Length: 420
Image (cartoon, rainbow, N blue to C red):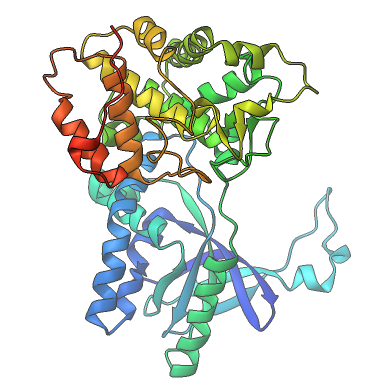
């Protein structure tokens, strides 16, 4: 049983819920709030919840450990058992404020919430944040953790451990998760000050001539309609391509690196310059992109670039990330960026013709399955001839993969021509 705890609180009501908005020290949240699975009797449910919590809790702990400007949204905590007590408080008059002018609603909302220590507390919303606190405590040690002055905003609601009470709490859990609006991808790129790829993308949107006139779709989806004659690509595709090109660590280390802004501004500037280099080289290699770059704000893309008949491979958002991935792979074979783009310029890009018909285009729609994208990457690497000795990219293997996608016998498959 924990000791008695007094916490500052505001009391409010919404619908038939009475809730208490409080400030809860990290140490108290970690010690008192149990995992959601601990209030389930079903072993299967407990295992399922724990499996979902573990990976993100470690990421949150790393965020807390490495980010001095850390901040959390409020967590919603269910309370059952014990006897929590609410104590209203009176505001003293001062030279600057006369509490007699407080409305009755405001006056009755200010107080102290006392927890005796025998309550059962569990997170209805914010399970990952609570588990992240516990993981953070394990990593830095209990003494150092309890010395922290950090607090989280915790909203307490009463829970009744009865069939009707369980139903009521489950409904609240579902409501919070169903109707909470997640931050969109475009909002992350617009606001994230830690992710170097997001920072670089913002600079591209503001300063690169291909994008600064708004030739990139800010919609939440990656794809573009054939009728979209405004945008060259989508923000998601732009971010993915830039991210692939900037990444200089393995996937897990790169994800970890992007959670904390580099302390050296020169490092950030270097990533921005590298991002501009990728798009500069692409534009320099492709006359059609040079034309897009010269278009006036009110001018439309030529219909032939993207249409219901297919159009140019490059003007489908699936392609920039594929190009970036191929470039990274080609560099592993010793090919420079400049040579890659010079060769990429010469490969066929008409979607309704080989080698893309049946691979990325079915005659009506784009085909975006991962196996098709992987085959597209192999085809590009084959055509630019980055592995002339076929040490890794073998004709027999490529013919087999292509025959599987096209549902033909390997003997019937004709590989595209390699560039000399």
